[in-house]
Amino acid sequence: MPASGSGDGPQSVGEELRDRNAAWYATLLGAFVSSRREKDKSLLALSTAGIGLPVTLATTIGIPSVWIALLYAFALAAFLVAIFAAIRLFDLDASHVEALLRELRKAPAKKLRATDRLLFLSFAVGVVLSRSVPRMRLPGSIALRRRPA
Image 1 (tube, rainbow, N blue to C red):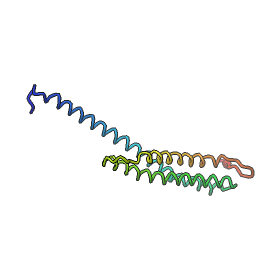
Image 2: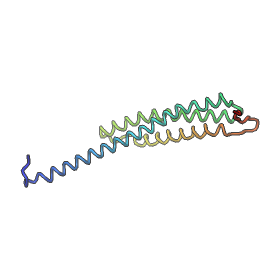
Image 3: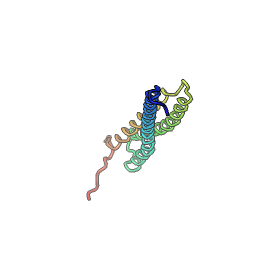
């Protein structure tokens, strides 16, 4: 036990404060990484489910024109790109954390940001294209009507 007046009191308070700050920072960093990973997992799950949307629309509404078929194809392609980007993002994330732990200077931060943007953009394009198909009324196409109850 340090004697009072030996000068160890302020140093131990400083060390305690530094330890608290380090613990606070670690908690915030863990929460940040977890929330980012959850977002990526959610987009992966939604993109996987999104593949079923154009397929379901094609089988229920049909494909009345080449333009609709192209929209279906582009929506499927956008969701597939989102799926592959999410999987790549998980791999890059692990590499990034490993590089930071090893204190390497070449952590793939730029690749992470670019892949994250690709994931979100391709998912958004897939949603917009899938959503626009049922709303299109092309010449010669039949609009869906609700059956009277």
